[in-house]
Amino acid sequence: MTDFRARIAATYDADSFRREGHRLVDTLADYLARVEHGEGMPVLPWAAPAVNVDRFAASFPEQPTGDFAELMARVLSGSNHLHHPRYVGHQVSAPVPLAALCDAVSSLLNNGMAVYEMGPVSTAMERNVLRWMAARLALPESSDGVLTSGGSLGNLTALLAARQAKAGYDAWNGGAHAGPPLTVLVPRTAHYSLARATRVMGWGEGGVTALDVDANFRLRPEALEEGLAAATRAGRKVIAVVASAGSTATGAFDPLEPVADFCQRHDLWFHVDGAHGAAAVLSPTYRHQVRGIERADSVVWDAHKGLLMPALVTAVLFRDGARSFEAFAQEASYLFHGEDERPWSDVGMRTLECTKEMMALKLYTCLCVLGTRLFADAVTESYDLARRFAAKLTASGDFEVAVPPDCNIVCFRHTPAHVPAPEWDALQSRLRERLVTRGDFYLVQTKLPSGTHLRVTLINPLTRDEDLDALMDALRTAARR
Image (cartoon, rainbow, N blue to C red; front, side, top):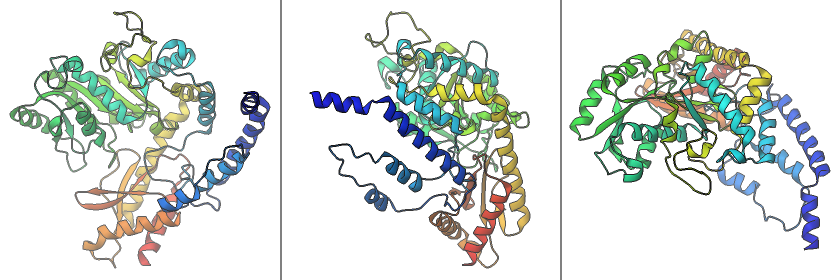
């Protein structure tokens, strides 16, 4: 036991932590200086899954090895570099470095947030961050919400509240079959998490009723009545409509005002999946894209997309704050005290997580220290950049754009004259594989009705027009080879 106490003392030693922390911050700062300019670094040092498993194989030692710095160096060198200006892949931001320091504070304090007394500071920060976000969305003062771990969980939380509000029976206590089978109307372009959420709730395949979209992949307002009638014929009770503010595949913004009108007419819950695009409200140039979002009953907004935060920080905001308690209306006597009380400060009553990290800390800190203008400008510039890139592709003669971008997502394909049109789908896949495995760029692809397209998300504020020029040149070169 004496030996154990000595080892514990060494493990928690403040001076050792200081030394390792200084070394790590220096290493990370050097890494940022290199990767932000792409100096001699691939975007992704590609390796097959089995290769990386072997690289990080470990027979975890019984005694300390002192190899922390060496291990972190290997982690940095082998990871995807989201701060590289040629990272234009998934909808995951290149986070502001200050937020990473906040994550270190959060991890060391480890103040779980099921109840206020376990996370007094982070609970207060979360309250004020949510108020700021709700005000930007022009939601009423009665609004409230929670921060949770990602848009998928955010959508589930919102739909659980919608079920309690609109099902007409207590599905939480009575079960999914305590009343008629339910469904929600959702555009065909919506994120897969919505179909997953309804299946989790026990609604089965019919839990989502798909609505047609137009040529720009936006929900067709006239499809709402058609979808309601089809669901009713199928014996389903429609309780909600979900609209996208920045869909995953193409970044399309559904027309929110006609959806709000329809929901008001039929007494349905109106949910906006704004995980990617709700941040448009910060931009004076592009906030018109989400006109009508202020009429939503619930909104999901990912700070790790439009607000440059590390994953995961998702706000679930409710127009009627009382509804935020109904998603998870369950009592745990050892945590929550009082049969009728619903204190806003015990956030575990309103989210699937019980122990939750101090996710508000990084967003609150960055808004305070860096100012809100930075994030508003980042949204505007990323949307502007997407439009400039789409215009350049359209004017090129050997690229085509699937649809004019609504936000910072551009879907396009290379169509060189020497490749027959029937082979274009296969060409896009080969081009992407070549660029990614070489580490030149990180981009993704998507399947649209007209075929396979390359897809970039210009979410990295370090990406410049010159990088996108280089992307076009790299695709041309790869196609010639």
